[in-house]
Image (cartoon, rainbow over all chains, first blue to last red; front, side):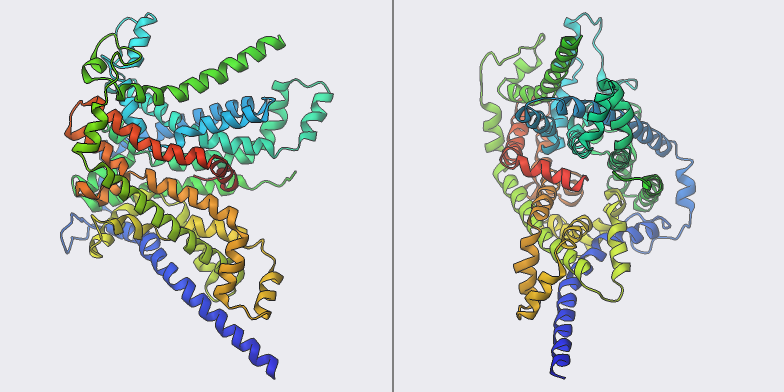
Length: 300
Length: 271
């Protein structure tokens, strides 16, 4: 009898704890994370321009989107940017991770890992302004060095449709490569050394060992890194907004910038929300692909 | 052959080192040059005369210290609150049973992947309804709960043996006492990693402050750079001085906590 009462008492205090602890968290969570998503979807069905009682337009915003050459261009640029930047990012990061890991001295390994990560910790805005000056066609250091090395005429890096998006890729990789380098190095560390030693004893050289043992064992890791990087690159904004403002000739206009412009400069929030929902859809598909491909039936 | 591979390896690593170093070095050099020298062709490598005009301008002609304070206050406050809400949420989701728990937790997981651009416009409108736009609260309140933080803490809370918590209960410890005394103490590495992520995210955030803040004196450091680049057109020297000053605090923090940074990323594998 007595025991039961005590049990009930603790049950009540646990319930109070759950209610007191979780309620404020869930209120904040719903107001700033869940409701905005629903709100966004609903708003995309209205012609909302910041005035009360916006007219309901159904899927008209979406229909307009797919006839809007500016948006379609932004979509194309974003996909192009994501594919190139993610592939380059993972290849270079893996290559550097293997190189750094092959260093004999632990101190040196730690130093390079820490050094390559450094650009990721500083505000990207500051970095973009530095690169902006370095890319300057007339007095930027990049053109001056290239001309010294024998390049004929200066390249207008950020103002030429052929080079502008690649410059954004370069700056993004410079900023961001360290993240994946650290994650991939951790992945390499988790591969049991016995596998590689066994192959070495069998006479496999280091290139063979990398492609036949390391890479297959890292597949799941790489998949995860690739998906996370794609999702974050889909939201690319600061680099473009600061360095090119989407130009030249909309050649670097990306979805993130397009949404910002329509929502906060042209105050067409309904239309911008429709773009955001399309973006959400794309990222949802990428995440589902990850869930599907991430399922493997082996362990080590 | 073996020697050639070794030389190649060293060459690649050294050039990697230089590629990372150069923009930092260049930013520092430009911040000490006069505008005329920056524009000159061919450019000079080191400043022919080291001048401090840019730094003087940043510190006297703009409320730079105010911006620094705004950045520190909003980032530190948000980080501390997120650490608390994440631990509490993670503990409750990890160790208690209640109705609707799974559904709520799925909500938490589902929002983790949602890009900021999707929630940005509604968050702006909600903040406008709450009358917190253009204030420090706008930088803090929307970020007080992190789905990722709750998820991360739950992963670590699950490793705490139930017996430890039960034993404390039998000894008569209250639920809050268990939370602060046992749970928080046992997942400290996860909290450290989380704090670094949240702090870095808040400190470097650009898009949300750009949207939410209007007044110059309310700005945070990343926006300050915009100020120097739009209002003082082509004043490269001042712009670079501001960049240097903006980068120094976070680089200092990074060198102090480098181990935690790297462990944090390894632990979470996420950005």
